[in-house]
Amino acid sequence: MKLSNLIVDSFIQKFSEQENFCAFSLPFVFKNGSPAILNAFRHPNGAIELTDNGLNIQAFADSIGFSNFDVIEKAREFTSSYSNIHILDQALTVITNENELTFDLLDYNDVIKMMIEFEPKPKSDHATKILDQLRIILEKRFSNLEMSPEVQGRSGGKYKFNFGSNNHLIDF
Image (cartoon, rainbow, N blue to C red):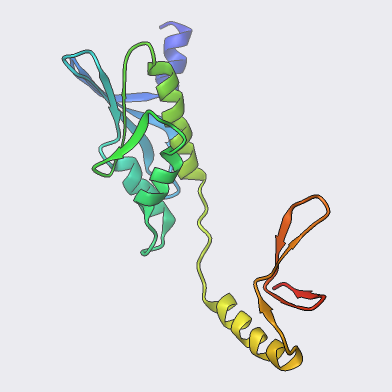
């Protein structure tokens, strides 16, 4: 076996192949242990469709662990900078041709990596409760408490704070 074939076979594992269809597991693993999947189908018009049939999106959802997290919206956010990649029927999909296939595969892999590396920030109302209690205390101390003031720095950048009064700025 040629060395290049050995390396490709080790890197990407083909688990199904027919005349105009093939399926691969990619060298990426989601946090839930599922491998990233790619199916390729050549249409009669010559277009090549790359899709995961929803398996990568499902693995992404299983890896998040939050029941109220919108994985489809997050996946759309990841694909928004790639004009060729879309979420169709909850599947990560690319329609390409032989000339663009290499570039589209690289973009597809970038989106998969973003899904795998994504770490959601847990939403907690704990900070909101603390800010509410802090606001009550500060309202007693300062007569004109401003909520969420913005200050422009010397460089022109804007800095946000939780509270402000006269020349006092408070951030939590």
